[in-house]
Amino acid sequence: MTVNIVVVRPGDLGASEISRWRELQVADPSLDNPFLSVEFALAMGRLRDYVRVAVIQDGGKIVGFFPYERHNFGIGKPLGGFLTTCHGLISVPGLQLDVRTLLRACKLSVFDFDHLVPGQPTFAPYESDVRPAPVMDLSVGFETYIARVKANSPKNLKTVRYKERKLGREQGEIRFEWYSTDAGTLRTLTNWKSDQYRRTGRVDRFAQPWIVQLLDEMHAERSESFAGVLTMVYAGDRPVAGHFGLRTATTLVGWFPAYDTEFAKYSPGIVHHLHMAEHAAASGLRQVDMGKGGREYKSWLKSGDLFVAEGRVSRPSPAAAVHWLGRTPVNKARTIVTDRPQLYRLADRVLKGFGRMRTPSQNQSGTPVVKEPWGVG
Image (cartoon, rainbow, N blue to C red; front, side, top):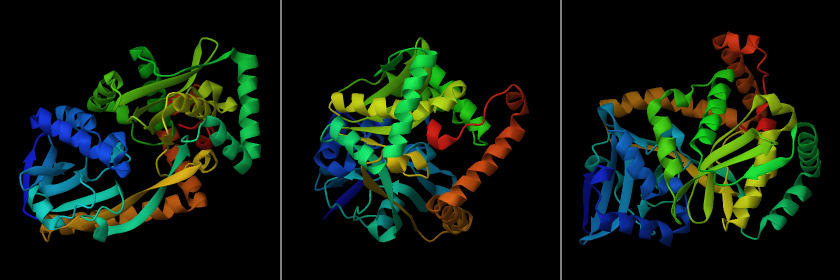
């Protein structure tokens, strides 16, 4: 195998290279995730100077692409970093590179991953853990999916359906909008999400203009193989819960769910997720990937699991050593917390306490503190 690796900015990819990327992605079911799509890489490249793509050739033929971010001191991060739920090599099946040769070509000292497509031969030896990402499996239709949810969690489903009927009686007829193209609706959703971040003590991602622009660009994407999908539940004329995610031809990936806290008692987030799954199935999508993480609602809405890998690979260097000292304790702590529901709930309460201290004016005005597992935000 004679490998040649050329590193470029996403915007420097030619039409034939973009076509090859799509061809490789479609050919491998494990790559069926919009965060691995070339459209996402192109958008990130337009917005962030540190985004690169390693184009991997063997005998003059492109056999893979490795999108990544190169930060100071050669610290490598997955494309999109904390924003995304999947990353890895987009390549021919079974491609095995010497990973340190890849890092050297990319001018990276270290590459830290936590949502990698598992089992890719190049990175598999460096996986420290493989974790489940719950999915709503719609491959056999929505009715079969909801029957499974009913069998696994009859009490939860009954409660949500009751709350949905109550919402309709008290606030207006329930209406679901699939694939909204309205920019104002997207802004309503991101405003809710910003409020949630502040209320729960988390960093407001939408305080960063480039992330807002990224969502705007993804919202404008419309093709059979890649698109941004904005959905919203209404009670009468009032929007109460929504979601913005990305899809391939067959998979919708959860990204930004949020809801109006005024309607929290009706569990609008769960109501929305069930409507979203029904419309996704009707549109030909085969699954909704809810992403790994400790949200209790996922355990009873799911009907299957995908898996993602965590790990780290490095070349000997002072920068890699410093990075290891800073990151390893944090990663271990995160894994311990998300694995244990009691610890997760405790950490969540602590963050919400910080949020209340950081935004006293919002809480004095009566903004309710929402139980996230039922609201789904």
